[in-house]
Amino acid sequence: MINKMKSVIRRNGFYIDLGTENTLIYGRGQGWVLNEPSFVTFNEKKNNRVLMALGRTSKSHLGRNPQNIKVERPLHEGVIADFFATESMLRGFFNSLNIGSSILKSDMIISLPCLVTQFERRAVEEVGQSLGAKKVHLLDEPMAAAVGSGLPVMAPRGQIIVDIGGGTTEIAIISLGGVAYSTAVRIGGHSMDQRIMQHLRHRFNILIGETTAEKLKINFADALNSDPFEMIKFNGIDLSTGLPRRIELSKSEISFAINPILDDIVASINVALASAEPELSADISEQGIWLAGGGALIKNFSKKIELSTGLKVNIARDPLFSVARGGAYLLEHPELLEKLAV
Image: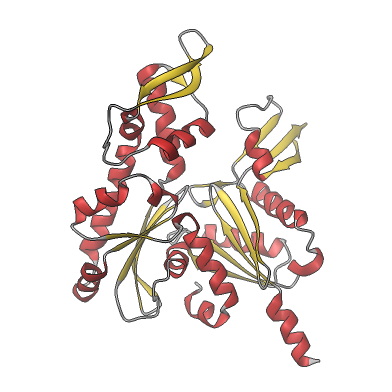
C-alpha cells in the first residue's frame, strides 16, 4: 500500500513553461500535454471580464476584435503582467486537458527568468498554488535551458548559455550546478516584432499587425544582411490612403529593424564574458557559447556573435524548446531538481 501511494505521488506532477509567447505543459509520465500561445480573450461587460478563448484561438482574434473584446498577453517580458489573466489562462488550459483532479496536491515546476524580483517570484508561486499544486518549485530559465541543451550542469566547468526568449534574453555562466553569473535584458522575440512594426510605419507609412511582423522576422531576418537585394512581398495597410495593399520591399529592411536589438544582446554577452572568473573564462574559451530560445534561429545570428566575441557559438538542438525540454527532464529526475531549483 505504501509503495502504491508513493507511485501515485511520483506520478502526479506537472512542469509549466510559462512564456511570453507560448505556454507548454508536461505531465510526469505523460509527456507533453499542451503547447499553446500565451494569449487569452475576455469579453468585458460592465467591468466584468468573461473568458472567451485561450491559446491559438485567442491569438487568432488579435487585430480582429471589436472594442468590448480584449485579447491579452498575460505575461510581459517574461513575468506575470496580469495575475487574473494568467490564472484564467492556466486554469483553462488544465481544464481542456481533462485530467480531473490529477493537478490537486501535485508537485509543480514553473520556470521563470533568473533576475525577476521576489514579488514576481511570489506571483508565480501563487498562480501554481491557486491551481491546486501541493508544492511549487521555481526554476531559473537559463538553468532549464542548459539542462535542455544537454550541458553537464553539475560538472566543475564553466559553461555559458544565452537563452533568447519571447520577452527576455538571459545569459548565465553555470558551474557545479549553480549560476556563477547571470544577467537578463528584457528584450526578445516580441521586441523584434515591435521594432519591425515601428520601422515599417515610420519609414514607409505601412501598418502591419503583430502576426505579420512575427512571420517577417522568422522568414526574412538576417543578422548579417547577407542578401540585401532580395525582395519580399507581404500584405499591409497604406496609411496614406487607409487601404490595404500588397507591399514589396527589400529583405534588408527587416534586418535593419531588428539589428539594434541583436546588437544589445551581443553587448550583453560580451559583458558576461568579461565578468567571468579566470578559470571559468578558460573553460568557456574551450567550450564556446551555447544559444537557446527562438532567437537562436535568426539567420546568421550565431555568426554575428562569433565575429564579436571570437568564440565558437553552438546552437542547441531544437533551441525553441530548450527551456521546456530541461524542465521536463527535471520533473522526471527530482533528485537533480532538488539541487537546481531556486
